[in-house]
Length: 176
Image 1 (cartoon, rainbow, N blue to C red):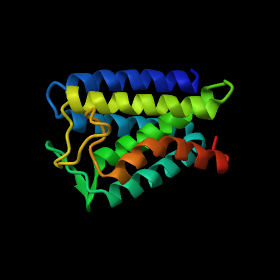
Image 2 (cartoon, helix red, strand yellow):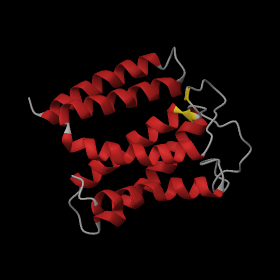
Image 3 (cartoon, rainbow, N blue to C red):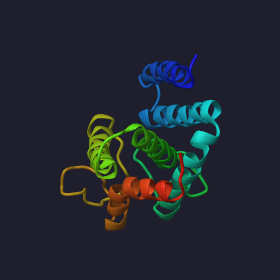
Image 4 (cartoon, rainbow, N blue to C red):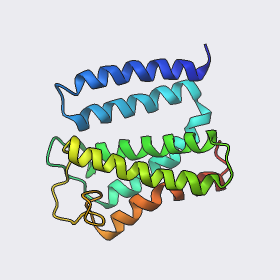
């Protein structure tokens, strides 16, 4: 069995379990566990291929989560002052972004993938805020008044630029 097939089967199984668990457990907790397990499975299957991506994504996520205090209106799990939910979600999201970027074979790949990143970011933020009710305990206004990315201007800039910057860093470091 090819590595990608093995990963997809495991990912589908874990996702089904996560969906079922979502009826009984806080959605943030389910997502955090699912994404952490998918990163672990990806690393075990692909080892070096995903290892560099994972380290760089984790460093970017830790920079964000250690400089901005995330506290949600539902269950929070902290290590020190770092909330594990955004740490794991950002790490997972950036690794997935890089994997997509490597698979796409089109002209202007960086620009197109960066635009897709922003669209997906806005969609994920919208779903998280309105459907899953994942909300910060803060009074920051949302980006453009559309109910997504509630935080300081610096946080909003990070969210929008994180994907393209991550791709540029991993390109510069020749991460495959």
